[in-house]
Image 1 (cartoon, protein in one colour):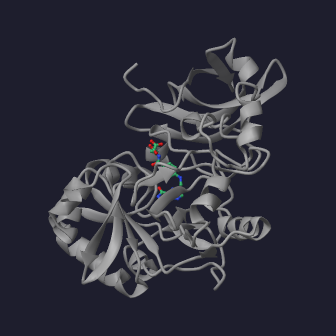
Image 2 (cartoon, rainbow, N blue to C red; image 1 turned 45 degrees about the horizontal axis):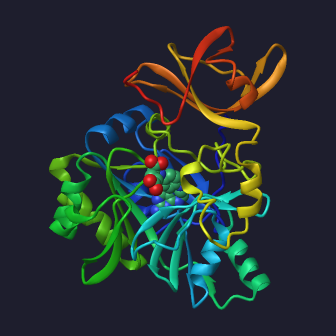
Length: 364
Ligand code: THG
């Protein structure tokens, strides 16, 4: 990995939480949707253990909202995703791959239905707003597309519910996974959902008033002192152990959702109007590659991401990390299905690893 200091300019947007993130001692950032995303506080491994044991507050304001409003909103969202959104409830969150007409993945946001005429796409790192505006223009849809004053803040970890109940009240406890409620903080109503990019449990607060960012941050830290609350961020170790895919890393526009194992989020049998429906129907079962897990019993140092077999390149590693909890080296790899049909092991640098379905099953 290249590690150089990036010059942070106005085009690398800071967030309403950045001052607090700086004060908490952030050590490095990534850039996501042209906005700062904290990457390390203490160390990736120390941050990981803390996340698994306590509670963290994450500045994920870079998960920008593409707001779609107007009579044709639901039609536009449905055009973009092959997942059937017709039965979504208000304030339900849906993980939706967005696909182009060739089945390629444009982004993998969480869609949030406010009403049929008001949706948010909480996006990963690509320009969904431009895509949505282009489609709206091309299809002559009656919608507006904009980026609202909304700044997601995640509260993650086993003590997240306890902390959130102190700040937002006991109603927090009745929110089911991937559902949201409008709750108050200092007289401002905002969406709080049980979601987040970890499997340690937690919530995301969609703060809708940048002026309340520091008061909200401070209140979480005041109320969480005895819970050992800390600033954190999406953690590579935790998310690989949990099988959470990263757009731009594990998934790209070159991939279709079957290759990425996103079958559960595609409804080919539904009677919906979706750009990618025809192509995905034709592709199903015929895709060439598959994203799978690899597990090695010892710590690996991969010298390249390419994976070869009998001198032929058969795939590549998209993410990898040492898991200190399971004492295994874990990787996601995109491999030819042809290889997968005949093998359950793979050899890299002379070390044999097991091929696993995702998410990893550490019991077996
Ligand atoms: N939260 C919000 N916005 C986001 C993310 C987020 N935008 C970018 C990125 N993350 C989008 N990608 C994902 C990928 C996986 C999940 C959420 C967002 C996720 N998946 C669960 C799983 O795989 O088990 C559950 C999915 C489901 O059952 O529907 O949580 O994190 N606001």
